[in-house]
Length: 269
Image (cartoon, rainbow, N blue to C red; front, side, top):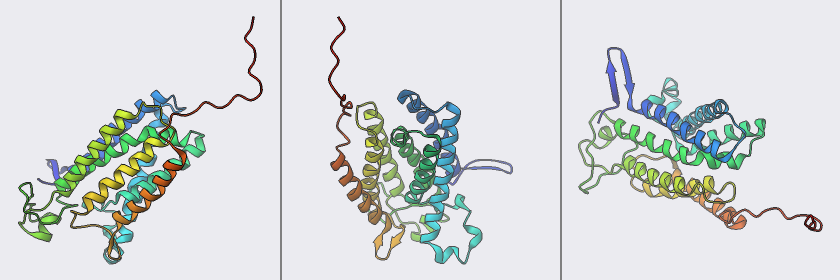
């Protein structure tokens, strides 16, 4: 494994950046298919504009979230704050940044928020899977030491190798990649079922919260809130709130047609 995918003279293409580019274009293609299938009032050009805004704000939110949790380091190394190619993007911050940007866009253009969120849910989790491959090639987001036969020994110049040396570690980033792909497959397979608006996106949040809670138990590096892993705390809050909301609204039920007011007109003779 190596962080550089292609190097031709001064041109260097890193796996981390390449995965984000692939996630953008493949995710955008899938989002466009869903926008057209749902008949949402967005042209192809507007769909790409929407995706670019959400994508950039998601990356910004992910970086700010990560920097805030590691401020003791970045306060003394401010030039490292924009260096996202060194890693350091937190998915929960990305979701916050992307959701705020998406909410602003749909409010401005008067687009149904939940329908567009449902259309984008499979693309989001697929993009996360691409990102985890970049993490693997960087040797970051690594796991704890393990004696399991699939343990990975990372290069000594990677974050994992620098922390643990030549010791087999849980490939935590690959665990999450696999779970992300399973979630994508599930969401993609049920996307055409007649659920109420918002069901698919909220299901994504629930499934990913479970996914991340599992993977975090194997991770050596994680953002912390005191003695508690931040992903566990955030995931618990999301699961409680979204679970309560979905049970209360029964989002998995088929939408009911609005009742007709007044008497039903008699059939024409």
